[in-house]
Length: 507
Ligand code: GLN
Image 1 (spheres, rainbow, N blue to C red):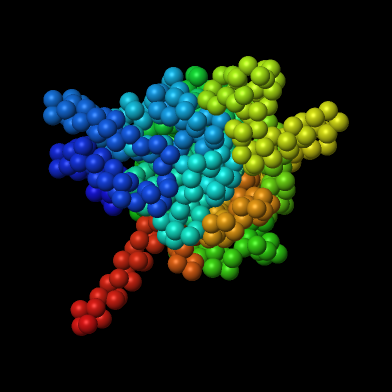
Image 2: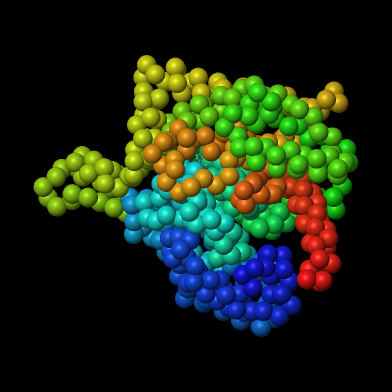
């Protein structure tokens, strides 16, 4: 049961061939067997999960009309606030905090009848690309336990890739859904900014943060996205328009017809003259995937977006600036950890001691960087400049997607990451090398446009991802193209197996 995708699971559940309790127990058994090694979860409450599953089974037995996701287990990144369930955002400063309310994402999944398996590990406050910045534990890549599962949503990627959850929620500020999905062989989608509620996500960089789905198939990702997405009046940046039909787009894509679609290959993301730092195996798989897409009828054209080269620099000013402001609320007074409150320290000292002991090195680095970039005299030179670059990046996307004169493209593509999963420990002392993991994902984050990562083969036995970026609110295009590639690759894999068949039978 843990090997099935959600589409298959829901069919079995609604036909009554398996119960929600059986499905949940299968995943809990798998967690008990493998999570000591993988380190995907920070918190699992088996009894609560089984009780929730039993309630679904009872309702079904009583003839209640249940939604299609009733009884399907799910894992949530620990940045998503969950009522009564420990939520730490990967930080010691929130140790022991049990939120008094549910994030909109958690609430929507609950009311759809999904069963919460647990909360997944992450880089502290979602700052990182390897999950090594978690204050709690190391998470390992199921493809190779000596390698990182990506980050910051590395607990979610390891859980889904290792079959410790059928799917999971991640959050993406600069790449934290797409990059971990890419390096663990999953599908991960960062929705259009404002189309999935941020209410109850512990804020890192509010103008960039978005929650989204991580799954083993494109269709599953689309279905999970539909379950969490849509307008929420409790998020002031929520967009009040209906989501496009994402699961339908995935199904349409899977028919393999991309005729009439124009796909732009971003030169600055691994193309000619810009391939420094990109592994040859990654570029090879990307190139082959482009041939597959062309074979499905898409027209492939190069597109140059020169300011994408500045995305990394702009992001690492904007995100830390917003973080320095957002993280000021962790002062030892209102949430979680409090240090030095023994009568011998005054309030300022308690705050300083709490922040000193509660925050890890990367979080402190970002708070210092962000405070500096926002300080008087430097604001215009750093933060202000970065915002101008952000505008230019948005304009380049808009120009690329402008099809009024017949030019322009429907989607842009690139590799999702410059390299496959790197070894644990290899970048943790080199923040700049760690930041480079997001080279390809940052432009879409800064512009707020949707982007998906879909598997496109292996390099040295490790997964490679292809990124599809679309105009704002056209998330359906990401799913359509990703599903077409997925279906073509599945078909190719099937043919290869068939080719091998006679040899195997004779053997
Ligand atoms: N790796 C990037 C960072 O450290 C992006 C993280 C994210 O998307 N949450 O900021």
